[in-house]
Length: 116
Image (cartoon, rainbow, N blue to C red; front, top):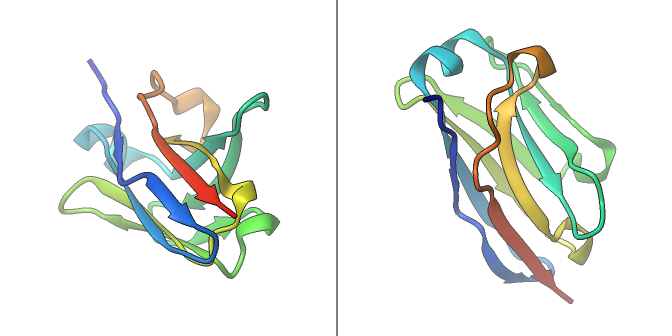
């Protein structure tokens, strides 16, 4: 069974930093552009950042200049480095394939809480 495992969340003050990790099954990792998504309380899940197989990255406007996404092909893991966090970043963060047609079951996610 394909399983995504997110980790690295926590409670941080505004202005702080966190690094999230997502371990993906090897075949899925190598074959797909991958992304980080987040779901805040009472809101729909939304994309945050994308890293293509070749390393090109894309970000939603709200996190540009603050977040970085990377992938470690040897470890089949993607990372989300989050800096200068703000309360609006509070959400459960998930990873999955960027292409909805290639997505697998969502993992448990990792909770990020930013206090003001």
